[in-house]
Image (tube, rainbow, N blue to C red; front, side, top):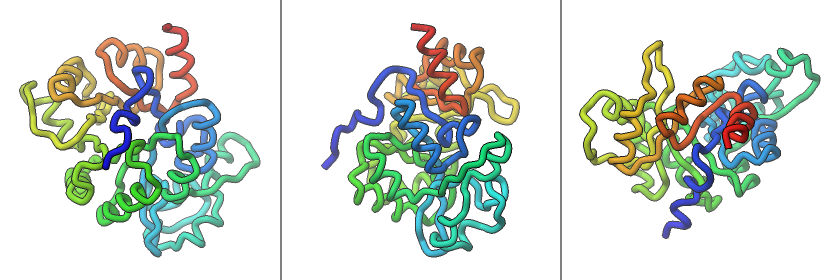
Length: 258
């Protein structure tokens, strides 16, 4: 039985969606990032999912640790007990010249602890769909999660397991059809499109995407948008949500527009 099916898409338009918590202002995909999101009254949090060697699902983008921490190794080759000892934001804090520590976060604990926050969950590898679905169910987070993946295979894996009970966002496949094929009704099994503002130098954002979304009753979220000029372009063609590395800047910009 579904809970409030409109809960995830509630609120003012455009929805501000901090990208990994807002990677220009907080260490991405960490406890600090989630706490910052809540403290600043944002309703949504975009994050990525990886699976540890012992089968735990954690919030993390890369397959490895090197970019964001001073440790080395693959997430898939490390147990959770070892990962939780690492300062997950060490390189961010080093760049900001801040003496601070934060931790990685289990998906289960994120959904359980921050039980009013909506989560955009990006599946970064195959084989985790069943576990992710079970965690969402166990934490009663069905109405406040949107599962996405750029990979059609990973997205289809989750849709087949969840049987449409959890909201999903289109993959690379749906984005290509929406942007470059004739605008008409399509039989998509998703509730949202999350399209890049620009992808590999190509402009993707457009009024055509919005028209396609309206015809197909999809919510349109654009990523990753970080400047006032580009914020305004998103408003002009009418996107429903903006994913950004600068959530505080976007919040201030929208407040000034009202």
